[in-house]
View 1 (cartoon, rainbow, N blue to C red):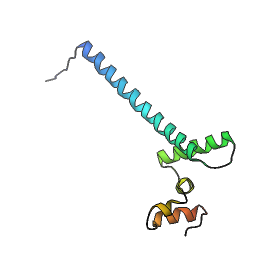
View 2 (view 1 turned 30 degrees about the vertical axis):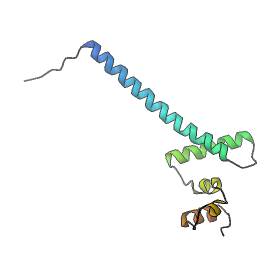
View 3 (view 1 turned 45 degrees about the vertical axis):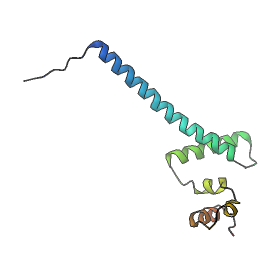
View 4 (view 1 turned 90 degrees about the vertical axis):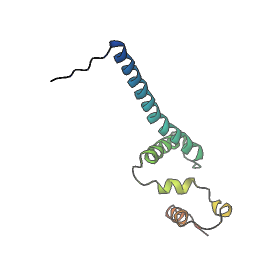
Length: 107
């Protein structure tokens, strides 16, 4: 015996509206997260490169950071403050490895 489910047209309209709202919310979050990561990396960048090059590098590193494509260890090492060892007691092996891979000298 076949059983059919019949919904009111108004209920279908409500469900479609809710689905569209959730889709807009999800797409908004997927756009906002890389944009915020790019803006933060641009603000933290201390390089003397040109403005468009700094924007492109921030966008690329932000997308890599959000999607975890590739290695961003050098990015993290460059954005960390070199005086962090003075503020935080003890030496972190991860921090030491990141700074050494970026070419910084650790004490």
